[in-house]
Length: 117
Image 1 (cartoon, rainbow, N blue to C red):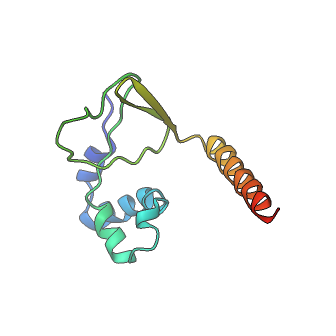
Image 2 (cartoon, rainbow, N blue to C red; image 1 turned 60 degrees about the horizontal axis):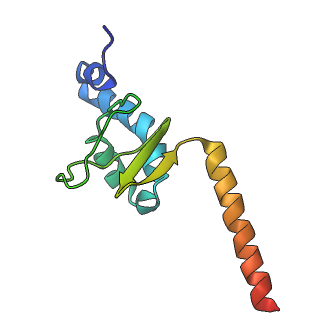
Image 3 (cartoon, rainbow, N blue to C red; image 1 turned 135 degrees about the vertical axis):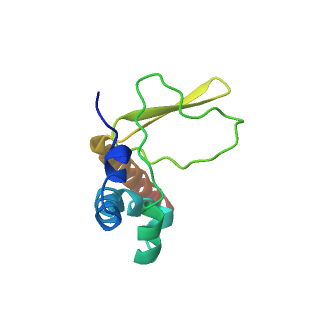
């Protein structure tokens, strides 16, 4: 039976544990707009409170209406958010985000061109 990252980290010396947690999570946390420009010390402190959770396909990680006790950083795969029979799919596929960003830039250019006319 495999061990979770959290279990492995618990066995390490505290300073090694912090270094590994920071290495694994820093880019993920700082890629979130709200965290991008925060003090490095705050980011490092915040990272020490993160824990890894792996979800299998079709597993519920949160039910709407339940008290919110976590913030999720999706590092691989995709997640579907459903509310009132409407589904929103989110993915970590970098190509998806490049395409979406290109579409946004194209719409912005079109809007600017229309405003200039």
